[in-house]
Image (cartoon, rainbow, N blue to C red; front, top):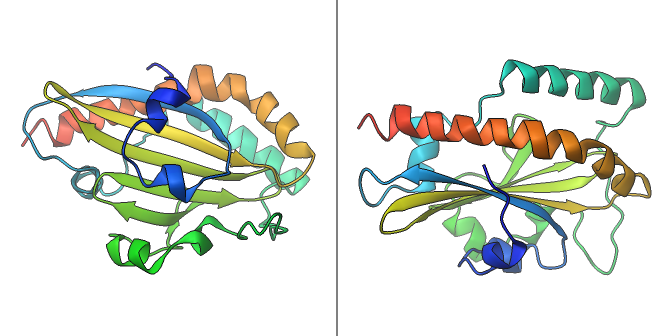
Length: 198
């Protein structure tokens, strides 16, 4: 599953580009999905999968268990209040406009595993995680083309302290070579099991 250039991703007509302006885009991934019928939205895909697009493999589950074990011992996963810098909001949910809230198909702040939903539009969902390692946003987007659907997964990371860059450097090889390729393969499998079966 290829990573793509930030320039290609930022050329897509997505709300996230202006919504997270000023938050560094860490990387973006893409998987191409079969075009069995027109008009499939990310919201539909999420609904037919019960919100479970990603299914960790045994290797990914083991890595995540190790990460949460270490995080629990070192206190990494305790919620950390964000210090405001340059007027930045404490949480991404605080950036939501009344229009964003009215348009969202899921309530802001709803827990989704270790993440909280910021917004869910028809073809775009943003969730966030704030702890003592980083303030991260994960964006899922579905774009229909004439011959396929393109599922994008983007990660934004805002520093919460001097440890954030070191932490991201330590976990990047696992994310890039094991975790995200595996998770995106399961997105395709879920697509074939749900959308392809209809």
